[in-house]
Length: 248
Image 1: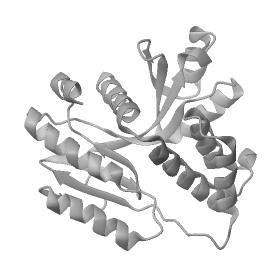
Image 2: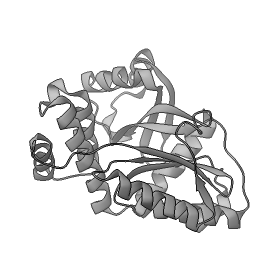
Image 3: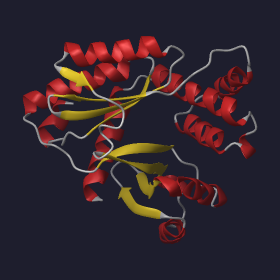
Image 4: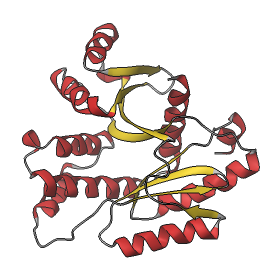
């Protein structure tokens, strides 16, 4: 899992540097809204809502914002969101996009426009299924873990595949199979360990190396996708070199 750990760390660092707080809040508000509409406003009986609220707290979202999002989700006359995904290639790099939108036509038009403008192509759904695995990724501040040995034993027993301790950034990343996401979350709740972020992410099975100039072009396209208000997450299989990281 060492390759994934590097990829996960890169994604987390890039997010911390690039992401605007308002954009992060907007994504989480949409997630809370959908969670409430799917499973109701009671977090105790709605696992997806519990995860969304935990993620909101992880980025220090004010309590009133969380409550407002729950209220929005409970409003039957509010906008109805769907969660389409899009798959394609840019300069030979696989791009997988997750979105949350109240207007699919607008979203697909925006996504296709970016692909076309920058030499990419939008593919059919399922075309990248062999390139990405869906994994549970949990980011936990080191300060939230009192006893690392006990934590590791408990979390492995709950289904963790990998535990990556990053002392430089003061965090622990736990990776699980998609089907073990819920059991890991329950174990963390039982241990009273709060996460900074918990998500199902699409992790590349293998990565592709490109030269630095091509890498810059791909990252520009990824940034454009991430800037779209309807886009929640963007995943890619590009191998990130040290030179690219320095440029970022």
